[in-house]
Length: 187
Image (cartoon, rainbow, N blue to C red; front, side, top):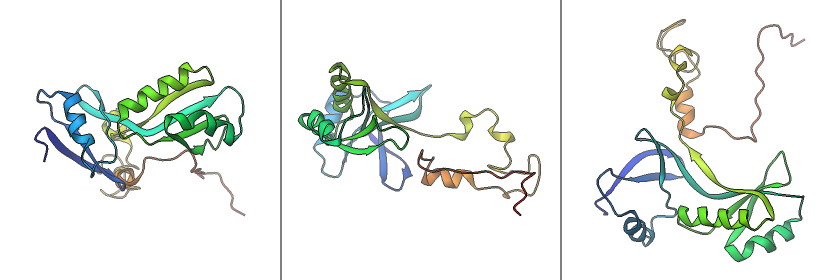
């Protein structure tokens, strides 16, 4: 319903992302209008590189405490900012993902700055969503196992269907994969 909005492709199972068109737009006004729409749960400007959408902010902020703190201590520090603990890093108990109640990514950027400037945290940064484009890898056309077009070996289409998988997820630090190559004796 807003004339300066266009719909991007659906990039994950959680929802459709919107982008403001390249026409001249007062972004502050656009965000004000969109913020009132009950169907929009989160607003983020896109990060562009050479005019191509590369990512955006999420509603999470990553903080690293200077020392390990109890959950209660962290919650008491962040509650006044409308933040909750989303999860702890699987690898480090001092790295915590905070969930913001803010709908506006720019306000979350401001919250991350406030947390950093408090001196309590080693760092506080917005958690970015990065879009994966195979074409950003100059060697992608040579990686037949990702997308086999018959360029090197095997029939076209005999590959691991990576692009289809990337439509669902681009990975998670909680997933571990072991690749067994030649020289493995299972017995």
